[in-house]
Length: 411
Ligand SMILES: CC/C=C(/N=C/c1c(COP(=O)(O)O)cnc(C)c1O)C(=O)O
Image (tube, rainbow, N blue to C red):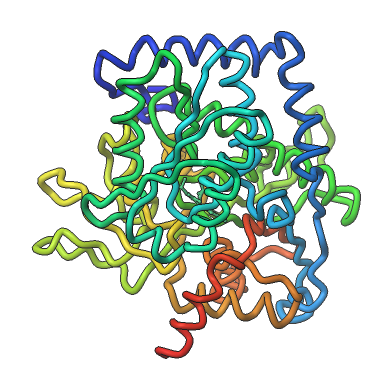
């Protein structure tokens, strides 16, 4: 596989030419910057996307946890989430590849919105597939996608969430691949999608690694990000993966001095939903804690960890946040968890809702319900945090206000 035992291209033969074409474009334009592709991508993410985003010290959270807490403000990217980093990159790549149309799946509607915005910005026709359930719980984003000129196709099948939206989008792509690029929304799917999305998102961690050393004089002890498919997670972590110092000082004879190399803990926080138990009979998992409780299997073209029954049937996941409500996860993140480099954990709906209120009240930032899971981790696992912590705020919570007010009234 592409990442140890994980990754690969488990797709129908019909898609192989498209994946080959994409891998060729990835190599030339992203890895080799042919025709100045990456220069144009970075310039547009500055002028249109609003990069770089701040790494901001959260004074009241730092006081509350008696630690240095820095927030990477991906909620300030144009459109309100990290999703534009990837969507703009892929729509621009589609243009360089001579495609005439882009399609995308969406769950929280942030990726759909980002793709619609990037398509409008780059004059590219755009169609979004979105589950009926998600349309109902992320209504503001449906309006935004349409306002940006995209067609939003409701997906009625199954639970009407992300899994079905991805299935529908892949089905469209299989028959329109000549002139269509599939702007996949996370580090999932067959090779080269997980690497392509990770590389567009890796700007998050590259900026944060530089900013935290400028502001705090050293690398962080802990980096925390929520994980749905894993794109904001991999984007934040990728620059820090090599910072795997041995925690204790190196032996005296080591040539590069006896300073213990910094060790940066990487913590991926998934949706614990309402409980971590899988209901085998109902085929329901009241959570989306794939990294913590999933098993190996193929989903959406890649070998990865996923929530499945013993007979291999993919179970229906749950989360209060649409963007984390997914029974799969990116193959590279599965590999980093298996290798011990990334620590998987989860917080439940309750802790996420509390995180939503806490950041809003203490720091004046309304976070997305997805990002709220990373904030819930600070509260639930404070003693596992180092002295210097970077938390990725992947998006803002305007889209979630109705859900949060309803959920809060219920409790
Ligand atoms: C691609 C499907 C996921 C979506 N969103 C996921 C999401 C996530 C989780 O997705 P990943 O970063 O890919 O794990 C985190 N934060 C925010 C603000 C999100 O919107 C979407 O459609 O908007």
